[in-house]
Every structure is written in C-alpha cells, then in structure tokens.
Length: 325
Image 1: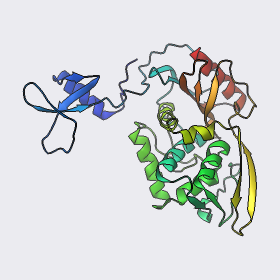
Image 2: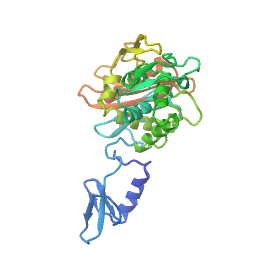
Image 3: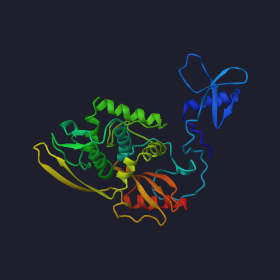
Image 4: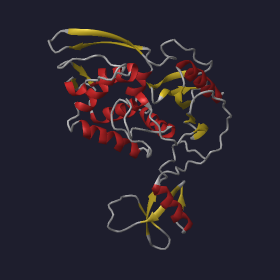
C-alpha cells in the first residue's frame, strides 16, 4: 500500500500539480514557489523557475486503500484496525472512518497535549471544576486543594483512567479549560486526525464528541514516539503518594485497566503488549487500542471499538493481533 493520505487536502493539491508537470524528487514533489515566501527549502529548475521541495504528509503513515492482506473474523467489534508501523500498511480494517464515541481512549489525546504543554514536575491542584458526578465514572475522588504532579497525573490518567485527573489536567492549564480542549483538537488536526472532535478531556459521553479507528491510530502512533508515554503504559500498576489539602500525605495503589497487562487476559504467544488505552461507556461499548510488537520486535497498533463485553473484546483483540504472524 502506498502512503498517500486521502483525507489531507494538501496532498490533493500535490496530485493536481503532479499531473500538471511538477517534478518529483525522492518521493516528494517540487511545487511552484512564490518569491515573497519565507521558506528555505528552495530549488531552481532547469528553466530557471523557483520551486519549493515538499514531502508527502503521510509518507511515514499507514494509509487505507481498502485492500487488506489478512482476513480476520471478529465476532463483536463494530470498528477495528490493525496497522503495521514499519511497513506503513493497514493489515486489516473495518469501519475505520466511521465517527463514534471512543470513551476513555480520548485520554490519549489528553496525554499528548499534556506532554507538549506541561513539564512533568508541574503541580496540579484539584478544584470543584474538576469534580466528576456521573454515576459509575472512574475517578480517584480528589478533594478541593489536593495536589499532584503532572507525572503522577499522567500515570493515573493512562493506567487507571481516572476522569477527575483528566479534568485536573485541563483545568490547570494556564490558558484555561476551553483553551486546553482547543489545543487537543488542534493537535489531532496536525496529525491528520480530521474526523476527531473532542469536547472534553476524559471521554464521558457528550454530543459531538467523537473520533474514528484511523484517527485514534494516528494519535497513538504519535504518542509511542515519546518514551515518557511508553514507560507509563507498559506498567501493570502504579503506587504513589500525593498531598491532601490539609498537608497530610495519602498513598494510593492502582492497577492498569489493560487486562493483558494486569494478568486478567492471556497475551497471544509471540506477542509483547507494550501498552495502550481502554475505554468503556454505555454509548461506546467496550473499546481498546494497543501498541504491541511481534516476536521479531516489529511494532504494530491495533484498535477495536464498540465490542459487546470485555470477554468478547479481548477474544477479538487476540484474534486481531494474532494476524501479524
């Protein structure tokens, strides 16, 4: 499969320019250059005209051409995808571009934005604005004035999927909650995740909050480049102590919600699960996205959205990731 991202408008322009006679260089393209531009990547053609060298946006991404090398039989997942990172190919896809609520997989984009705009030792303070009142929602139960570091917040966010911590991250941003949400969506668009629109940092169901299997792949594919992220999500659990508003110290011990890593579900032979993110709401069903490697150390990303229950979700995920063998 060729790496041509069909959802990115600039590449459509590049394609038109190619047919108009623009020269090609190392899988990139020379586009007409205006003299008032500040770009430094300029070359001169044989005719003396100025051109700017542009690389394809998706040259390092897996791109769907709707022809898959594997026939995978899933019993439940409404949408799914399996992506070969080294070879930039989609091994399997099902409803990959359909927008749906991804539940707590949303927190991947929260983490990506947090890692970009915070330092790990920054302090976060819990306020009433970060309280989660939805029945059954995962949370730590912080109280007004409790404080944690960004590093602690990311561990709790990604392993335990605490919704109140997602709110703490957004509410403590210097530009405010709304600006943090705007930055989340800006980050998504910069990655090509053009079908993603998040209106909160946690993934609890709200109108217009949605993404796709393919967009979630793009977000996780960016995150796994950061060792801070992979070091967190590869853990089976997390123990930490934080300062309460009255100055006392409280210790908490948390297990990951990833059933492969917490020992609840058996990992397929020859597969190493690095980590990922779970998600569950009534609207989203059971969701899971993973970053994993095969027996030769080759990296992949797999995603299943809207499975019926956890047993079926992990059974189907094992089938999906087993397709790399």
